[in-house]
Image (cartoon, rainbow, N blue to C red):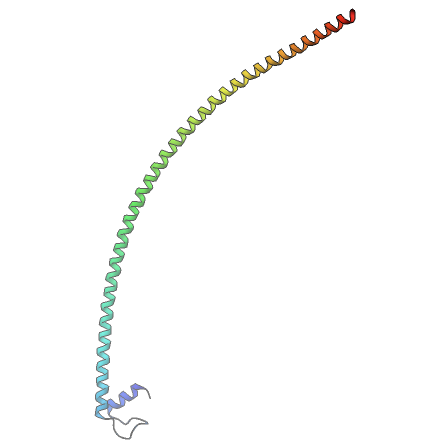
Length: 154
């Protein structure tokens, strides 16, 4: 049997269906009223604590949101500062790299010119040695030919 039916029966002091054939007792009625008051009191206390906790949660949420916003702004400023510093260092590094590249290229060009001059000089010396060797061979051949002709004529 549902509780609401029993409560209504006790309040109206009627007979409880399927129960004893007498009226609901005064003690039962008193207990139902007491239960209702305790239920109301407990519901009120739960509601009060719920409101208190909701307020506390809201306060903490606002506090944390403010703190997060403050830290986010601080971090954003720090990131911008570091980004600008990185840009300056990158520009400085680019200038230094370009300067070194120009110096290295100039040095390579000078070495290339010097090497080209040395190669020309070596090529000239090699040609001189070649002509000298050819001249020596021709002289030897002419000398042997003269010796052979002289011996042949004798």
